[in-house]
Every structure is written in C-alpha cells, then in structure tokens.
Amino acid sequence: MALIVSLTVLCGVCMLLLVSWFERTLFYNHLVGDLNHDIAEHQAVQTAISVPQGDSTFYKLPNTGHPLLPKAFQDYPEGNFEVFGDARVYNLIVRHQAPWVYVLAQDQSEFERYEVLAIAGILLGMLLISGLGYWLSRYIANQVLLPVMTLAAAVTDDETSGRNPAFSPDIYPNDEVGALARAVQSYADRVADLLERERQFTGDVSHELRTPMMAIQAASDLLQEMASNDPAQQKVAARINRALKDMQQQIALYLQLARDPEECQRDTSCTLPDAARAALALWSGRADEKGIALVCRGLDAQAPARVPQFLIGAVLNNLLHNALNHTVQGTISIEVGNQSIAVCDTGSGIDPGVAAHIFERGVRSPQGPGSRYGLGLSISKRICDHQGWQIDVQPNLPQGTTFTVTAP
Image 1 (spheres, rainbow, N blue to C red):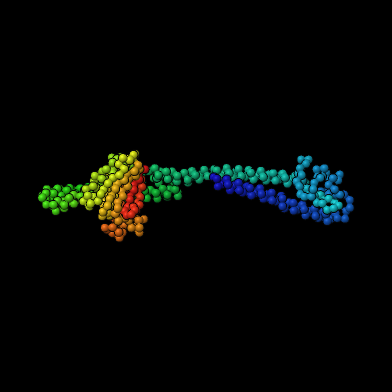
Image 2: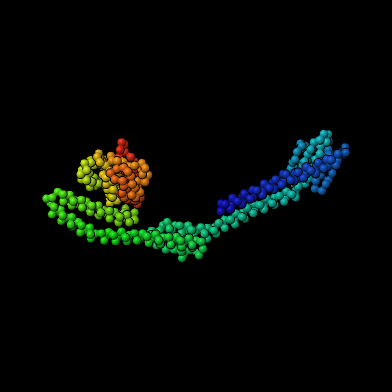
C-alpha cells in the first residue's frame, strides 16, 4: 500500500512539474519569438501603435504609462509576467529598447482553465489510483500474505512437533501457499518422526541396559564382600562401582536431554549453592585420591536462580571430571556467584589452537595428560543450550582454566 501511494504521488508530482515546465519554458519561448517578430516587423513605425493578433495584442509605445496601453499592463519593468485582471489571465512580455517600449499581451484564460482541469485530473487520478492500490493491497494480503502469516503463526505456536492440524495443507488453497504448507508439513513430519525415533531409541537403550547393569552391580557387590581382606581386589571393585555409577548417570542424562526443556523445568530444582555442595561432596574423594585440593567458594552467595538439580549436577560433574583429568597438582575450586557457578583448575590449560572448538565433540589437543578432551564439554554445552544457559571458558594465570555457567 505504501509503495503504491508513493509511486502515485511521485508520478503526480512529475506531471505537475511537467505542466509547469511547459508553461514556463515552451509557452514563454513561443511568446518571446512572437514579440521579436513583431518588433522587427514594426521597426519603421515611429508612432505608438496597438496591433491585435487573435488572442494577443502587440504594443509599441514611448513609455509604459501611455494611455494606449490598458491600465492593467502599465508600470511593468522589462521581463515576463502573469497578469490577473477583469476575470481574465494574461501573459505579459515587456522589452525596453530606447526610446521605445514593446509589450506583447496574450490572453491565456483558456489555457489556465485547461491547466486547472489538468491539475484537478491529476489529483483525482492520484486519489483513484491510491484507492485502487489500497483495495489491491488488501486483496493481495487476504489472498497471499494472510495465509502465509497464518501458516507461520501456526508453525511458531505448534507444540506437537509438527502434528498440529492448524497448518495442514488441506485448509489452504491449491496454490503457492498450499505448496508451501505441504512442504512445511512434510518437513515437520520428518522432524517429528526423527524426534520420536530418538525418544524411542533412548528409552529402549536405557531399558535394555538396566538388566546387565543390575547384574554388574550384583557381581561388584559380591566381589567386594569376597575381597574384604585384599586391598587390590577392593580397588578393582571400587573402580567397577565408580564406572557403573558413571554409566547410570550418563544414561539418565541422555534420557533427560531427550525430553522437552519445559518438562525439565518441572523436575526437582535447587539453587546454585546447593548444586555446588552436592558436587563437592561427590568429587572430594576422587580429588583426595589424586592429591588435589577441591574447595568451594561463595556458598553464602545470594543466588536466587533455581535450576533443574539433575542437569546442573550433570554439567558440574562433567566440568569437574574434565578438571581432574587435566590437573596433576594444585587446586580445583567451585566458585558460586549470584547468577553463575564456575569450575577453576590449575591444570594444563587449553591449547590456543583448539580453544575456539573446545565444546565440539572429540576435540583433540597435544596438551595435558591425554590428546583428547572427550565428550564431557560437548555434553555440557548441549545441556546449557537445552536450558538457555550460557557457558564460557577463560584461561587462568599462570595456568589452568575456568569454565563458567550463567543461569538467567
């Protein structure tokens, strides 16, 4: 609508300027040519004369106040003028060539009437075209834009993973919009099928792994009882138990990530200080085994944010596991802020060559005890994206790394 009105106004202004140019340039040039011709033709005349020529009159006078010149045309200097008088309009051209004054007066009342009609026609055309443009834009909006906007709103508001009948192609006309609706529906169906297969796969895997994990747990418990007097076997049994718990946590985590973020928000929540305390209690033993000090700071912070307990625990577990793997000696600290929680270590740090890709799966680096960072950071990034959290990494001085998770 705005485009049509703008183009209409532009065309109208151009036509008005064209009429004005025609009047000021071509019309006056024609009159000047007529005046020059009359001056040359009556050069020998030595008396005041008035020569009618149709709708124009030529005057040769000794001065502009001569009684032969109508009062409306008197006292004009040299130049081109438009004179209004006696309900008529005249074009007046005055030339001074001593001792004579030459005047050409042309009645342009008829031209002025045509000019007014032309301007009125241009304005009326602008109004008609604007009205037509308004009607056409409404028609286009109803026939094309409105169905597209309706389809976009239906897709945006869909909460059924593409199964919402609100954007079914059957309710749209069999045109370009209908083709778009069919393409959207086909893509949504594929996405919905993919999500459904992922949910079924994670559910089936977790179900199928429970039985062998229970058997491993029972065998581990039996081994611990049988090796109560053998420290080596006790160490092996403890390692089996730790690996089993890690596997159980990972399976539970994958199941949680397969759920919608809104469903996760309804799970048991905790504050950031509570999450730090739980992580400290879980990882203190393993840190002691490596001779690394694990401390927690900021437990008295006024952190109002409440986060899903399981997911924040999974992020901290991955970050602490990563810190322990890359720290040989020194300190690992959990630092709690008002809206954030950070894991700081004094380990080998991050190779600058892979710093920009640290959250990608299986990133390799020549630094540290191993050449591979594993999946922990990638999983932590996925959890943060899943929940709308921000995870950042910064190097420590003189060595080490700090990972910070900020919860809005």
